[in-house]
Image 1: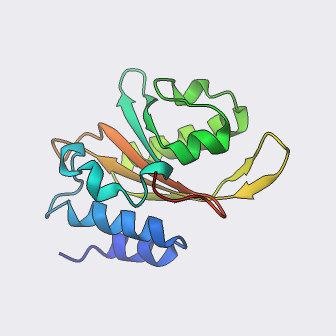
Image 2: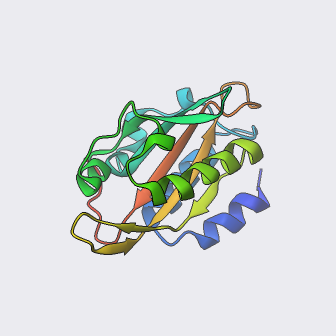
Image 3: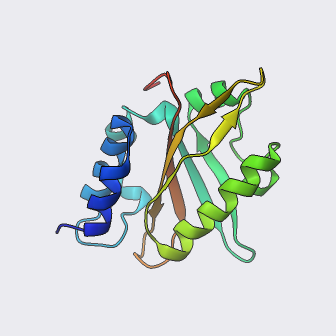
Length: 158
């Protein structure tokens, strides 16, 4: 099944790693709107594990908890956010940009390409590319968001 929305999105993704992540997500849908977390084995995502985030979607009120933060991302940010809440992230600007994007993914149940600017502890800024992908075990309610984040000169894998 060719999904014109996914095809159009794939054409906008600059990073080959994120293009591959989108292909993996799309292949695991098998005719569904969204794949489930159980459809992915870590070995299949080895190419991007270090640059991957998994968010648990918490309802009432809608919030997002870091379940997994890849080693490249923890290294880049200087902190491992695993277990913390996105709306409590120490970087206010990131919170203000990322929380609404996660809400869009939950509301639309569609992938979302995001290109924010990250300012490192040294004051250096980097534009990066993030691809957020909804995951659902019942194909109706988004229970997790899988996000790949690629920075310029980012290390790949683990």
